[in-house]
Image (tube, rainbow, N blue to C red; front, side, top):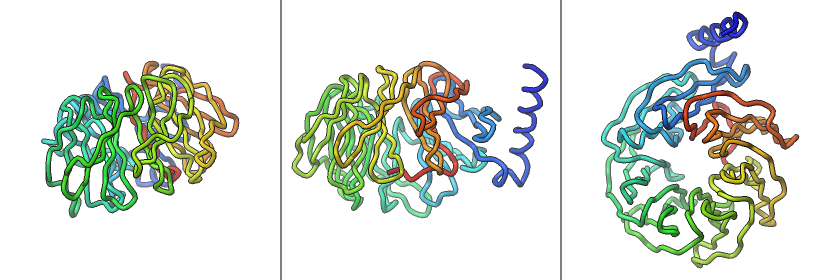
Length: 324
């Protein structure tokens, strides 16, 4: 490392230890799933400030309802790490959460769902006063992958990656309400802001399946690119980004017209995304390139890359745009 880079890194590390960190810097959290670690990156200098060890295979993360913690789900070590969302430092570890590949809280924050990809089930927990109590383990099809919720917090929708299905689970009773076939290897899933349609990334093909979940039927296929995978809303309640992991692109969809309105080249297997609060920059984990790509959304191009650990997956920005 040259002297200038060393000094810059030392300055960032010093900032992390000072009370003024919250004012002078904002962090990005990147999960290195193959390294069992988390990279903490200064959003202003685009420099990795530090790397902390967590459990095995951290894939996804989710902010706690009180906003005081960021929860990292470690699938193979069967636990959760709670991080300070401002500094990224570990607050506590919760063990005995089986295979939390993907996680999420219902909109009313009463329910917490852990999706067990290798166990072919979802586990539904009651959430009260910051603590999780298991309600029921719910067997599903093969390789449940991602989860989203109805606006009224009554149902959780889960993609079943190796069964080519999605499933609806009643949260109050933990009963499987229905399943329906979709395309090959469904992955990411998200609800439109009006609670009308589910959008499902069809990873084994090249499109997003638009599903009228009340009627249980597909109403449109939006061709985005090979390996359509995960979603991030633009924060304007109209546009939705989808990462096309095989095509090496990110597509922007107009949810009113159900059309692709922008395609951005993002090499390295783009996966999870997050957007800064001002809506200018998107951070995209490049799953196969050991880096995070920074995308200027107005220019529609990658303007910088940041080296991180192996197989970077989830990403979270402190001070982020709304999810939809």
